[in-house]
Each structure stands twice: as C-alpha cells, then as structure tokens.
Amino acid sequence: MTFHSKPNRRTALAATAAAALLLLAGPAAAQDKWPSKPVRIVVPFAAGGTTDILARAVAPELSKAFGQQFIVDNRGGAGGNIGAEVVAHSPPDGYTLLMGTVGTHGINRALYNKLPYDPIKDFVPITLVAAVPNVMEMNADKAKEMGIKNVADFIKYARSHPGKLNMASSGSGTSIHLSGELFKSMTGSFMTHIPYKGSGPALMDMVAGNADVMFDNLPSSMQQIKSGKLIALAVTSSKRSAALPDVPTIEEAGGPALKGYEASSWFGLLAPAGTPPEIVNRVQQEVAKSLNTPAIKEKMLAQGAIPSGNTPEEFAKLIASEHTKWAKVVKDSGAKVD
Image 1 (cartoon, rainbow, N blue to C red):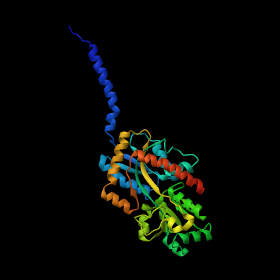
Image 2 (spheres, rainbow, N blue to C red):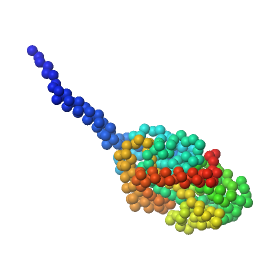
Image 3 (cartoon, helix red, strand yellow):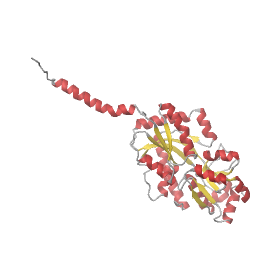
Image 4 (cartoon, helix red, strand yellow):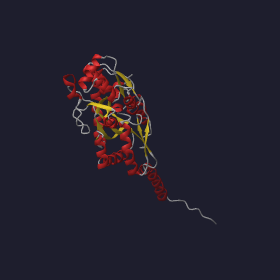
C-alpha cells in the first residue's frame, strides 16, 4: 500500500513566503547585473561636434569601469530634438542614455512651440560632463579678404554690408545659434542663419569658405583655429578661456554695445525618467572618477572644456536655472526656428 503525505500548514506557509521573496528579489537581482549588455549613449548631433567629442571621451571610460560597451549613437537633427526624443521614449532600464546640451535642456523649450519631449519630466539628470565657452570665428582667408581682424571690424563690416554675411550653426536653437542671435540683436547687425545637423558639417563648410562666421563650441573648433584655417575673434564667456588666453571675450572686444554679453554651453548625461537611482548614481560616480584622471582632465582643459562630474541634484538645479536664463535670451533676441 502506498501512502501520500499532505504538506502541513507550516510547510505551505514557508513555501509561499519563499516564493514571495523570489519575486521581490527579481528586480533587485536584475538591477545588480546591470549592465548585462551594451549601453547606448545617444548624441543628438552629427559626429565631429563638441557633444560627440565629449561622449566619445566618456564612453570608453565607462566601458572599462562596467565591463560592457558604451556605444555612441549619433541621432542629429531639429536642434537636438530628434535624439532627445529617442531617449525620452526609451525604456528606463539604464541601457539608453543621452548626452544632453544647453540646447536640448535649456533653450529648446523656449524656442520651439511644441517639443516632442519634456526636458524636465521625461529625464533624470545624471551628471554635468563639461561646460565650454563658444568662440566667434571666421574662415581665415575670408576674414583677410574682408579686412576683418577683430570684433569691431566685424561689426562695422556687417552693418555696412547688410545681408552679405551668413552665419553657420550646429542647428536651430542650439547655443551656437543663440550666441549669434544675441550678438546680432545687441549690435544691430544682420547675418543670414544657416543651420546644419551638427558642428561637424558646419565646420567643414567654414573651412571650405562656404560660410562666413560661426559661434562654435571651442573644443570642436580648436584644431582648425590652431591650424590657422579659422581665426578666433572672441570667446563668448564672461572670462577669457585658458585654452586661448590671447583671445578676448566678446564683451571686451565689442565695446559698449556688447556690455554684459555672455553665452556659454554645457553638456551632460541624462537618462529616461524612471531609471533606477542606483544605476544613475553608479554612472555619475564613474563619470566623476574618470573626469578626475589627469589624462582626461588635461585633454579637456586643453580643448577649452571645463570638466565637472557633479551630482544628479546639482545638475538638476543647473538645468532649471538655464530654462529661465535662455527663455529671456530667446525673447530679447527675437530668435526663431528656421
């Protein structure tokens, strides 16, 4: 005769409790394994610009730290809005990050009537990677041909030749675009805006002589300035850049008309809203650690970028303050999306 024993109440309760613990441990266990596959860093501009340069400086350091590839994915267009939208609508699992900019998270909300993402609600800030001044630059040959050696010469030429100068930018609504619009409104000079899908393509046309002036992020233009193909007229920050100590600020070089002019850029990592704070904090810590290494720090400073690596909370405060600042610049300059 065969007997089948029934589990007692204590055994059944223990089994139920164990099953519940396994369910609760599931997400935590999965989170502990992050990253278990490559992580994508979306750059919302074409390759070759400062956003791309900084993403590619950080990506290999994160790959080494986490033992998984961090891959840069360029999604340019619409002043950074296309790439930002991709990340905003991605799963909040830590596998898609954004190298955001002052454009995507400080300017575009004021410039565009409707954004395909909310720069505050759809993202969680991770860390500011770097802040950089922009540089007002011209093709060296064209500047010589026009007799322009400094900002004062440029203003005089622009006023006496209305409509002749064109101004390249990395896209409508970027800090590069708005730096030029602010300059135009303060000096009463007119330049035709030509937006590109990033600094890289714009710089190619600048070097080729197809564009006259650009207010580019300093790191992406540094090589062309040093080669002599582009001439730096001024930097857009309130203080001179240590990377170009002999180049004056626009306020210094422009006289009373440009008193108070300041338009710097910044770049930082963000994740889709809802990304676990443990992942956000781990990425922030590793970025901060890598930016502190002498090799990367010196390389960034030499290009004109000031590395940061601040906390998510500090980065969130910066983003909030930039909304206020740039909304006023957009309004005062009368800038419009092309």
